[in-house]
Length: 153
Image (cartoon, rainbow, N blue to C red):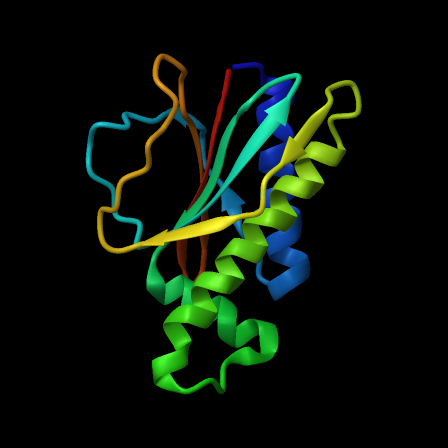
């Protein structure tokens, strides 16, 4: 996978996290994800990408960070029974914004994104496209880690 596609997602992840939540995050070294092993993530925001390239973008994190994001966005006073659903909606919107910003910076490639969806549950699975690499871009914040995974063919 070309770094000219990966780098805009890395930059957008850092930028959007800072602007939406006023929270600094630091990226670690991207790596090739082994899709057959377990993972620590409890919520994943997903969207499909079509056009000159096609694939999937996932924003993955734990509930603790998702709840903190909800709080930092000004919606921290939700009832406990609404917190889970509101967190999933926030993760979907964050995924949409990061992907939209990244894709809009790829001016020489025609890409379109689907509406985001979320998957939750410990060690949930994602059906990644077969025979194409998934690049994981890890980030850390003072409230926990998150990851932006991209897979394009």
